[in-house]
Structure formats: C-alpha cells, structure tokens
Length: 570
Image 1: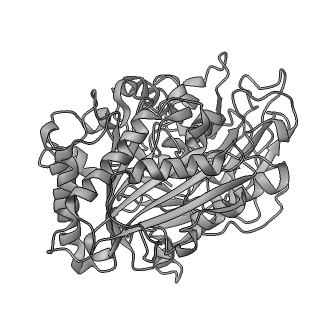
Image 2: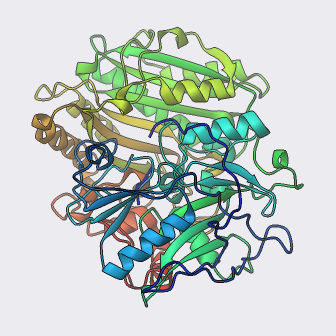
C-alpha cells in the first residue's frame, strides 16, 4: 500500500522452518493460523514450487501510542502525512503478515501497509487507518532454485537489492534511482528507472508475486501468482505489473526472472547492467537565461526524445533529466547517464548534449546547486566514466533531501508522446520565474522514457503507458507546514495551466498519455483540479482499468484493501 528506511541490514536469513509458507496457505477465520497443504502455481521449471519464505528473526512487534517508538513508525518520507493508528505491527515473515491480516479482517479494522515510506499521498498514514503493517524489516534478497528466479521481499530497498544482486551474481533489475524506495510499492506501480530505455521497466522482469489476500468470507490466505500462461492465479501477477499498491492484498515477496532468460543458473536469470557508464551534469545560470534560450533548450530536449524513442539502437543506454528549477535555485541543469560499453559511447553522449544545447546562446557551467533529489555535482561538468554500481550508489544517495526529518512535498506527473508546445514551455517559464514563491526545491523535471519500455504491448502488463517518449514530474520540497499553501498552490497553478486545453490534466490522446501511478496525486479525483471529465483511473491505467477491477473483485471482493485511489470494485 505504500508506493515505494534506509539501509537494509546485512543479515543471513534461514530458508524454511515451521513458520514458512508456500503458495495457497490459508488462515481459518475465528481461529489461529491453520496452514493448508500448499498448491503450487505453474512453475518456471516443471514440477517446481517456490522455496518457502525466510524464517523470521523476531516475533511480530506491536507498537501502540504509549510506546516511545510510535512517533517514528507513523510517518514516512513526506511529513505532511502522519498517522494515528491503534497500532503499528512490525513483521518479519509471510506467516506474521498472514496473522495480522487475518486479525484485521476478523475485527473489521482498516489496515494499510508501509514498506519504504515514499508514498506521495496519505494512502498509508491517514485518519481512517487502524493498523499499519510495517514491512520494512522484510528485506531478504535471495536465489530461489525451485523457481529459478530471484526472490525479493517487499521491504527491501532498491539500492540494497542492486547491491546484493550485482555483488553476488553480477545481475540486476531495471528499477528506480532513489536508494530508499521500497520494492513493495515501486514494483507494483510499474517501476521505471535508469536502465529503462535499455531493458524496460522492472515489471517486465517480474516472474511471480506472493500476496496475502482476504476472501468474501473473511479468510486470509497466501497466494503465489506467476506469469506462466497456465497459472490459474496469473491475473493476480498481471495486476501487480503496474496496477499500484494497496489494491488486492499485502505483497510479501516478488520473484524476478527476465522473460528472455535462458539457463538455470542465477547469472543467467536476469539482465547484466553495463560494466561502466558515463555521468554528465551541466547547468545554466538563471541570471543569464532568457525566455528564448529556455524555450529552445526545453524544446530541444523533447524533440530529441521524440526522434529517439524507438527500442534498440545506440541510444538505448542513455537516460537524461532536464531539471527546470525555480529561479530561486540559481540554476537549471541537465543530468545524463550513458552506457559506456556501447561503441563510440563518449561521442554519442557528446552528440546528445550538443543536440539539446543547439541554438541555446547561453554558456553552460558545472552544477553547483542542489536540484531535486540530487546535490551539487560540479565534478561531472566533464563526463566521468565509472563502474555501474558506483554510479547507482552515487545517483541514489547524492542528496540529503530524502532523509531530512522536516521534509514536506507535493507532486504531479505527465507522460508525453509528442513534444511540448511553445505555449506549455511558456507556462513553465511563467511559473518558474514567479516572485511569490522563493523555493529552490520547486521544479519541473523532464525525464527520458521510451526505448525498451515501448517494446511491450500496453495490455501485456498493467502498465499501459507504452508509447510515451518522456515523462514529466512537477514537484516541490519545503521544510515547514507554514509553507504548505504557497507550494501546493504553485504546483497546482503550474500543472493545470500547462494542460489547460485538456481540462488541467494530461488526458490520454495523440500528445499526452495520462499520469504515473507511483507519483500518485489525489487532485486527479477532484473536479476543481481535473476538469477534463476523464477520471483519475483512466489517467493512470487507461484501457487496463476494467481488467484491474475484475482482479479486484476476485481477490478483494469486500474491498478491505483501499485508499484514496485504490482500484474500485466493478
């Protein structure tokens, strides 16, 4: 239910044990956990079933308001959202999750789930939640020899997943850049990241998912759903390839195996990242920027992505971010990562930067200010070659923003199939130069998309946005509740005016293609801000929404797992 804790502790977890669960385990209502014989789904290897989940290292902890730990456990990254549940349950195994879910179902209590804590809205910490299920200690990353896939528990954070997979087996998954995002919500929302143009989304490599669901009678059970065509639970796997968190049950584990993987050893199961990458970071000073230069730069960035959105080709390994910061920041910037192992990689990077800066008659310089989630990086004004894992660590941890205990934020998103219009770019300029806001953390961020992401059909996974070429994130960070109104108001103004011709939101069509569910935005529900007549669920899920509703009806028929933008029952 959380969409996306810093530092997974290094630990060795023993597989198996009496508390471990397989697929199809059931809890009977009104009694303690009673485990039925597991019914395995269609396996990756004939006759195989998933390995049992890791045995717990501790019993489930119940933290109530009288406990000194409580205030730390009722909040995530965004301090706008602080909960007041009856209790927080810190769990360490699928069996413990099963017991807590059954307890909540039996008592009719509202339960939400916290993994990494990056939920952009109050879907986890809100007034109606009575029990928060804290998954942040379920962090195991291991090879499952029965599934011939890598098992990742829902509380594992992304950088720790990358570290384990790459250090031990030399492989990775193409997930997000931010180090502290939890796997639980990140994967279920689609999972876009630095390797997306070369290897697709993280869900394109999802083999199976383990979910604790509750049936119409109130009985909790563990379901393992795979992508195998003959798996009767396959629709539940499909729903977790972009259907968002908090909709169908509690995710406890994922398994990853690339769809084109051959062989049965761990080193053959997932993609191998480039051995080395280039990182480039350049800036333009706001003091020298003209509206004409700003317009040309932004238009160039979009045009390059429109022309280079097809899967494959030498630029598959390029990912870039145009950081249009508010004028009070002092700079705007261009951050780019390029696969250094492709032929002529350094020249390709140079040519990309040249294309983006063509006709921009303002000198470039080093990035000397913090921009969004990244700190200053002046040393990358000259592109630096470095090992891939080193770059993943650097880009994931370079800013202290996400560990700031006063951090407040708001976010909005858009997918684009075609370039921005000059009118839209003029709107950016207008709002980024406003003097009623003085916040270096306010920005419009344009990010690379397309490439291998667009090689997958829109209905093959629940992630429908498969023909977009770049993605926009409108965001603002600030430290004080006193500044909520001005920042939220600024963000709404900039976003709604950018898409004023389609009712204030990026309606799916020839030019735009809706919004990214992992950047959840409750304003999309509100006709004062979404005047398009196109509902929020169409913006997130497009034509895939009716199928998601059918999965919801099958696995959560009483709508026990719900939040402000959860899948509605049909």
